[in-house]
Length: 157
Image (cartoon, one colour):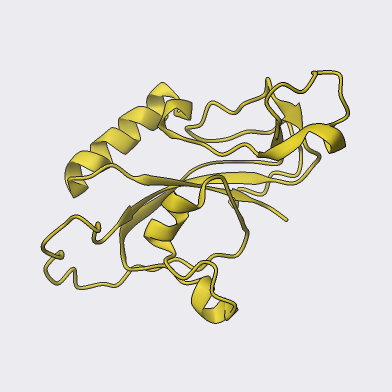
């Protein structure tokens, strides 16, 4: 059964969703853990995985660009066919999806200020946002692949 969540209160997965933040409407949010095949500081590549695993970006990236560039190095290329394709991956896992999105307020803005005056981007997950179950799953896979994952948060536009 697909994980289509149109109700903003329906939340699935291994993420402690930031329900304390301001809601930003009924768009959705998904969080993935991704293990790229090679890190920039690695002198050797994985030897013949036998299967190339790639991701194609179909929704809007949220959060800092540095993690995204590890997986999608051409993210800002004007050619969308190039920009939306990932590097080779060892694995990727959907950690959670919800019908909600949350907005960050500019530092120092009053809580009662309208969001259109205080908007400072969308919430994006990091390792501290994992539930105990999520942490166990990510830790197990990270021990298999010998590296931590890159967490990617997508906003359903």
